[in-house]
Amino acid sequence: MTNETDSSESAITIPIVTEPRNCCGGGGCAPKHEPRKGSRFLKQGGWLIIALPLWFVIYRYLQPFADYLTSSVFGLDPASHLGSAVAFFLYDSPKVLMLLALVVLGVTFIQTFISPERTRDILAKRAGAWSNLLASLLGIFTPFCSCSAVPLFIGFVRVGVPLGATFSFLVSAPMVNEVALFMLLGLFGWKIAGLYAVTGVTIAFISGWILGKLKMERHLEAWVMEIPYNAQTASDYKMNFTNRLYAAIQGVKEIVGKVWPYILVGIAVGAFIHGYVPEALMARFMGKGAWWSVPLAVVIGVPLYSNAAGVMPIVQALLGKGAALGTVLAFMMAVIGLSLPETIILRKVLKPTLIAVFVGVVATGIMLVGYLFNFIL
Amino acid sequence: MPVIEICGPGCSRCKILAERADEAAKSLGLDYTLTKVTDMPQIMARGVMTTPAMVVDGVVKIQGQIPSVEALAALLGGKN
Image (cartoon, rainbow over all chains, first blue to last red; front, side):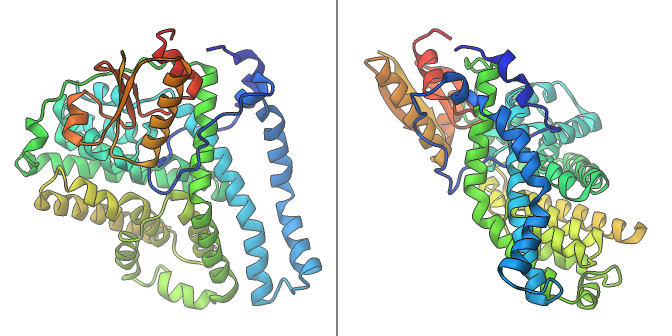
């Protein structure tokens, strides 16, 4: 493998940290064959040197362009319901998609430095509450795909990671989604992004700690401890700059290629809320005064499975219309952190009692966070 | 004769890795066998925790990554 490190270094100057829900499912977007011709440097990501500055220029002019399209090309009044919804959609679709591509590029690149195997080996040596805290923090950065949840769970438990710490990781990894974290940062600023990260880690930490204290080992399916497993730590695939950049670009193709329809649907819903739902109605249903809105947001959010990116436009529209932050945060965490498909996958290793306790503890944590923010803000 | 095994529950990422490994092995002119391991206990028995994974002659070569065809060829050719 040749190394082009020096020449494309400048391409990676994005403020980022970690992992996507780069999971299986639909997909099929990553190309099977790389082009064999053309400059090797360009093929290996050198084009990013041009593409990244261009990204920032286009991103800056999205709003005036969307306004121009709405009023001059479509002839809609920006103050009307329809005009405001259309302007929202035209501005938000490219904005969210571009932001997503940049975030995934950076996050996937950083994630090539971290593997679940290393996280596992770090956690295997710990015990007590520290192991829960460490697992919750590592869960943010470690690449995690829900289709690997079963082998990951077994791998963790079998090398001696405490059950509670394993749960902390399993809560934190999907819930504090780094793509969501940086999308929030880009869309709403560091305060909301920070709140999201801190509360997510806290929920993971405390839920795992409680689950550890409950001594749930007997509620694991028997085969978890019985099957032969001899942990392999590393792989032979040497990561150099070229390989990391390759992985990052593949990550963008895979994730953006898979989720763009969901994002457009999310933005359409968001645009409808933006243009048509009156603020007074929103305040009644999702405002601070409505105590039942937090549990309702969680109950609606859990069976709704969406990736982190798809839920962003809805979050944006809800917040813009005056929905309470705690309620919106609870909804978002329930959607991306507690998903029905993942629960079904985990059923292979956990008996029903443990599944129920797991979902119950995490859902309670999410609700408490919702109430807390509605109360203090 | 290398025995290549692609471990994973059968998601799209596993398929991509299998296709690329196949292409890489062909490009090297190897006399090889390629099988997909989808049974979870079988995957775990190979020491794999993150899928998709590539195991060659019982040795875990890749876990949770989908390298390019060129990188896979380098791995299979033992030049990495």
